[in-house]
Length: 286
Image 1: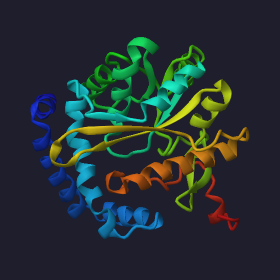
Image 2: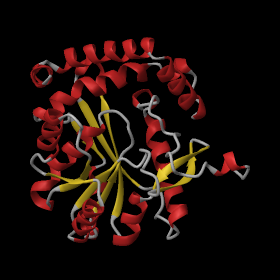
Image 3: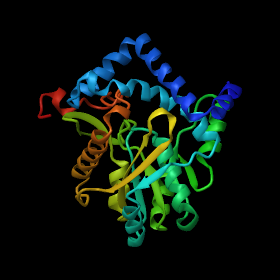
Image 4: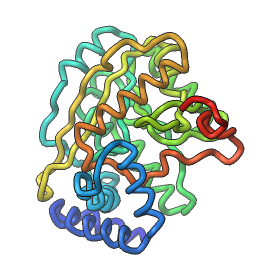
């Protein structure tokens, strides 16, 4: 398996993406559960399958490009909104980069690190080791590359993120992932309650860090990637619950800019095993 992983990292990007697209559609054809979740999640956001069908291939591209992103330097073709990041650095409170499972989200942090880490320090990201030893080692090497500091998904790791922000550095998170039980709250996501992480909001509120939204889109035919930055539409409200809602709305905004590259098959609405059901399921308001 490690040899196959390295082989994929050497392929030209156009071929990697072509193979990945095929993988995505094979997975779609073979998994009724995946098809149902993809259809339900995209419909919840108001999209017909015909409008987001390309996301099936992009899910496969995301998997196929990982060896290249982890084992090779993959520059982005262009960056838009760098003035937003520069203004955030000028505030001196650190930056909280937020991106959903959209496009090449792995490359979002790599692109930002390549641009700013030499002058501003590493970007700190949370890291959860894989179960397979060879993959865990490869992930650790990839995510602790130049300009990026990976920390464990533990209380110690969160403390390191807080320290990084207080030093005026940057951290990166994917706030649309389902957090472990006890580390989130129910908040609307495309109009339906989803168990949502509080970590992003807590980091921003506790440190005063500037929130910057990021998305990295794939160009057609394996021509590369474009990285976009933009500010949070409004300052986070001091109440944690409202801040979490704002962040969910910001992720929706990014996804709607490129819905054909979002992972609609991700189990966004799953309920942690020991967590109480969403309010709507208890008979309250959605």
